[in-house]
Image: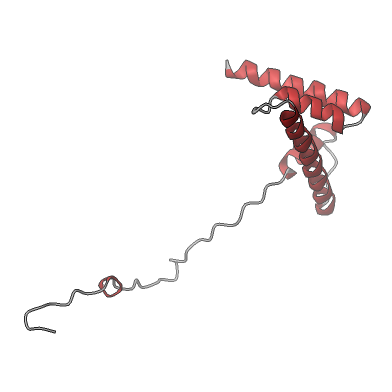
Length: 125
């Protein structure tokens, strides 16, 4: 080193380490897991207010709903690609429900879905 030149301190040396206090612990953000548990519970209480559901039963119901959702979404996606469209509309979902769900269950699903879409469109206007 030559006389008169100064060495600049590194960035690591410039920052003084912070002292940790007992109450200064960082909170970790827990990984979010999506589930239908709250919705299953709400519907159960509408139908049978006095009945509860076990953890295992809730897990089975959650898996069942996720499976049905996947099947309907996959079928609706196929319908969109068959018709060479870019938009997945309520019409494709309705047709997918008719294809995936059996008989009377499909009819109920379509009527409930139509009711929900009508309610949403009325609220957004």
